[in-house]
Length: 296
Image 1 (cartoon, rainbow, N blue to C red):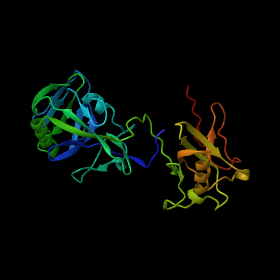
Image 2 (image 1 turned 180 degrees about the vertical axis):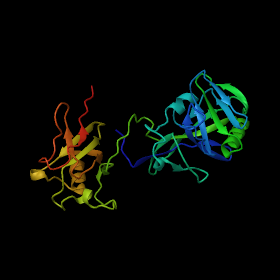
Image 3 (image 1 turned 135 degrees about the vertical axis):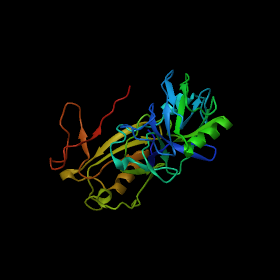
Image 4 (image 1 turned 120 degrees about the vertical axis):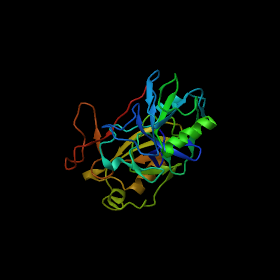
């Protein structure tokens, strides 16, 4: 397990003089036919597919061997395929983000960014000059990037063809191996040290929960110095448990190197396959908040 203060941020495809976000995959327009923003790209990765580039568009092909800092060489298609995408994009206007040009835009490619982390960079070779009013075939192991004509992204792709490359910022160091991400409420142990300072949430309840010395039922994932993972639910009589500071102290004493707590209000129920959620005396929502995992 990897723990830290992580978030998903839009991926930036870099070219001389700027960068662009990725709006859509294997399509020239947004779902419903809407145009992508001026500082955005459409990415085609279906190998062998023909991409019709309009007269007012600009495209470049990527191929060859992609250089990734701190990792073995890869292909442009593999690098792009590893980016995070939205499960249901373009459904909620609140999903839009402010892009490089200061315009709110739809984005469908993200990377994991750790607070204080350092992004891994991939350099993807450009195989051909900028193409307009023609058809481009997606090469094996490669991709085709398309931007609208007369836009900053189109000018950027033309400049990238001149220098022969684009760059992509990937997950921060240490996060590239993560196959899934789960949101936690607070990192209660970091580097083997209990985190006992209030993090400044607007609502104090999840932190203290019934006051010092009382607390609530807690659910936590942790790792120890041997690389083992734990899942622990802590409770006491009558629905009580621990405050967040006390939880951190207990876990540190047990040998946890890092630990992430989850919603410590009344949703810290335990789910068992084939059985109803185990809730605290039945007065909290019957929401499965933790799931046991077994590895062989």
